[in-house]
Image (tube, rainbow, N blue to C red; front, side, top):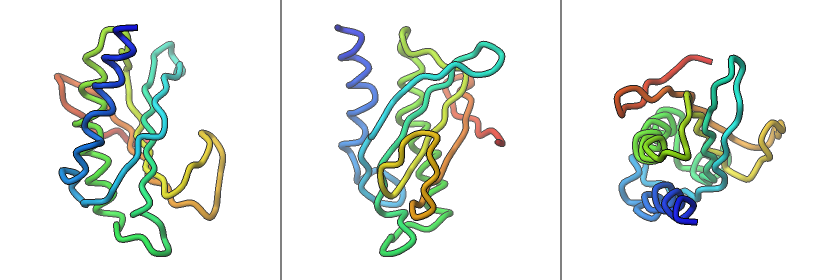
Length: 128
């Protein structure tokens, strides 16, 4: 139970500090999960609802969204990676303007994805 509480605090606390998000948009942490990847590794998946990235009515453009993804990796994935029970070889961060189930295509939704490895306590962007 202590590990679950530590995981919740490590992931949830920075979301409350929304004024520090580079674009200034409000985010809601939607899901955190771990997946096995090809080759036997594990990847953490952090998914956020970010209404500001919506095509219609949104206030956050692609460049600002990518900056936010980098910020989310540094402020959420790095602390998460330091927890013994939450180790991951890579991290996927998703920002979406509405909830979309993992692996489902929604042509009306706006989604941004960032894939990272964490090396020496820092996020290193990867290509898909």
